[in-house]
Length: 373
Ligand SMILES: Nc1ncnc2c1ncn2[C@@H]1O[C@H](COP(=O)(O)OP(=O)(O)OP(=O)(O)O)[C@@H](O)[C@H]1O
Ligand SMILES: [Mg+2]
Image (cartoon, rainbow, N blue to C red; front, side, top):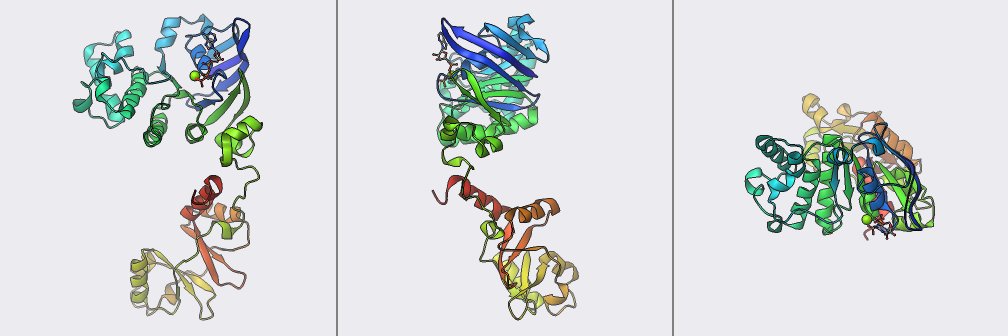
């Protein structure tokens, strides 16, 4: 979709882009990140030819953009500039309609687009279309900035630190919204930030730039695991997964304190216990406290009539792992077989805990962000 081939740009003697090459596939959300002055904005502006390059080529859909009409090119690419940049003397509808008007869409069509755009972010037309930027919160202004870039439905959208001016909460909400819009509208997005959290949250691919060069292009996972150099590592801070104390064994990713009951427990008693503890499956034990099996509330509802205790309803071949076994095997079981949880046993077959998707996510989060920090 977008392809850079050995692109160079200098101001006077100073190279700002030094043989930049990369490709962005259709529908990808690519994040450019790097220290201030490394050339992120410059790279972005070369895509819609706000900045002309000295050497190399940039292709969009295999067409060299140097051969494309600049004005047409620019109208076919959405652009959210660094800082908010709404036109203060235009209301929301007029701001959103800037490019559609340039494309000579009639009033009715512009109004329809404004409607649709505002709907995307849950800002009703009736309430917001006629407000001016200074009557909106920072987050709302930024939403309109994004909608304005999307209004003429361009296949490519460039965003230069669009959420840089916002408080962390609003920023987080808008990141989520943009991810959702990206999925829904299937745009190709090049997004600039210098915030690694934002990059990790948003990106399909992260491109790390330093002094006009690309020093790493990788998925968020890969860059967390293998930062290419010390600067990138320092951008990661303690999020880096390298050499971290990652959860390894089943015990590392389980939750303990699980509710168990004797397999001789009565049916009605078991249902009461489950409803009191708000669980839908009960782990059952033998008289010597070893693991016997599980019973689900569904099963009891369907087949419980005529059974005295849960033993006769219990599923005996339920998947389990020993606590010192590899956590990844447990993970695979959970994901591949679609079970709600797996049971973790001590080597003496007593119940140590269960692994659920939530317990796993929590242990990963602890490893990445630190425990309770
Ligand atoms: N018109 C210009 N004339 C001369 N130098 C320029 C010009 N525009 C940008 N530069 C220089 O080019 C380099 C890259 O600038 P650019 O705006 O692309 O950085 P950036 O990565 O977007 O930084 P930031 O994170 O601060 O926005 C900087 O050193 C900047 O000073
Ligand atoms: Mg910049």
